Image 1: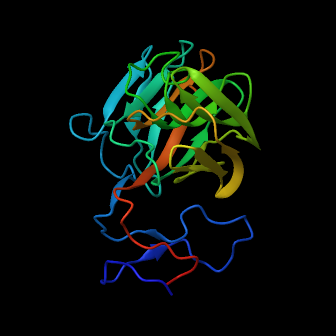
Image 2: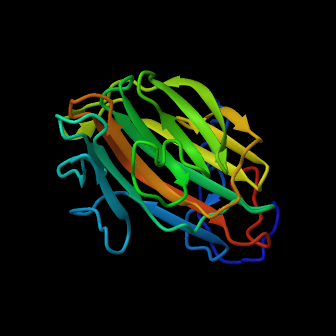
Length: 259
């Protein structure tokens, strides 16, 4: 067992002894309070989106972005207005995350969409911007997952200054729905930014692709947004967003198994 400069107790997540999916992206990630990491997580368990302190909430063409009541675990929901194409909602935060040499950023969100091949959705890290048909879907400087109208494929995307590397993960969305107190056909979408030269993308916690080109080094913020592909009330749901970034390279020693 290695050593660390912190001698107190630390909880580690993701160690199950079963790595048949190719390894869990958050294995050995500290989940207790640790000043060597910047940690953000929203489980969407409140009454409404706090667009004063926590998020900037925006809607497009009379769409909505709300929190669901009476659904297990808490959910944010973007919905088209039912009569206007390209309508929906978005949330974004502060630009506090940045790819840096020798430091990792961990991201994961759990999402579902109601019409997998006829709507747009983005979740990940991107620059702040005004929600629009092209923002953040074709915006400069982003790392995340894209769903584009006309195709149910989940794309992993890195964009630096308007030049992107967009890769089909080989995994598709299926149509999701509100079923009782749950949401069906969710996907866990995660990535690890490793320094400034590599991003590993995970779908349902299985590694699907690795990107080494067009990784932005500007400050980015968490984003979740979706918009309808037709005049129907297409919806997208987000269960949680988690981002964890190394604050220092002189931090906790990382182990290959539970210390």
